[in-house]
Image (cartoon, helix red, strand yellow):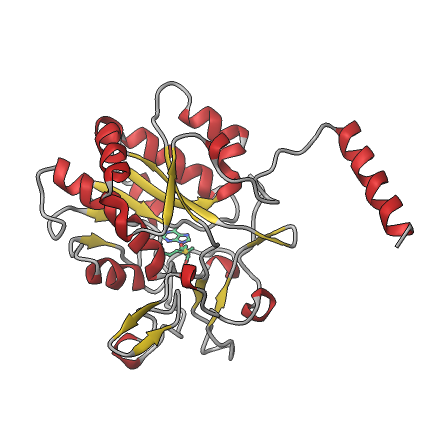
Length: 288
Ligand SMILES: C[S@@+](CC[C@H](N)C(=O)[O-])C[C@H]1O[C@@H](n2cnc3c(N)ncnc32)[C@H](O)[C@@H]1O
């Protein structure tokens, strides 16, 4: 699949984490915590060092999921835990893709303390058949190369509940349709504003950490939780709709066609329609 970059500076997106109500900002005591920043300054430090790794990948893939995204997913995870007859603290969550490990802190802060996210090569784990046991796969994979397609295939094959934070346009890809064809029930948990991720910077190269919104072909795009709960699907969705979702700022969709259209999810017309649209735009531009 085509690689997509998350490399965009915060300034381009209107300044780092400028808060709107929707941005999931919340109050801690009297102080407003900047949206998407919750947890980054915990214990008074930011993840600013890129840890040594056993793999190489695109620089822009090194970014961490904000707490807001996990908070949006929490109602669904709580339902899964309940259906597994486990406490949230006991349900085993596996995130195979490691950045600086802050996802673990975020999940812990939301009551999920049995989380596996270690500095180790996921593909080596698959190759040696030593993937740790888990109840739910929760991950934000790298968007470059074939990682998205690979983790989707892994997730569906495992037949265990999963929630993958992926670019919203992935659902329209041919490989996506092919992977979920044949009875993989999908639920899409989508925020109404794009999440901002935290790129931890590199002390050795003098690159500072910054908040980024992912981009593809120069356009910012949003990410959605692509979930599948298998036999729990109907109950998770029913409970979500009944009000379990209350703390989440997201909407849940059961079909990619229902996702709100954005510049990146919108279906492209056929070549003739695109040529016509280009002509229209050129004409409009020449008229000023
Ligand atoms: C978008 S980040 C997300 C990190 C984390 N899952 C989170 O949600 O905060 C994806 C990370 O996957 C890591 N990665 C790439 N290839 C990997 C591999 N083979 N095994 C484990 N992690 C890998 C990259 O270093 C990158 O930091």
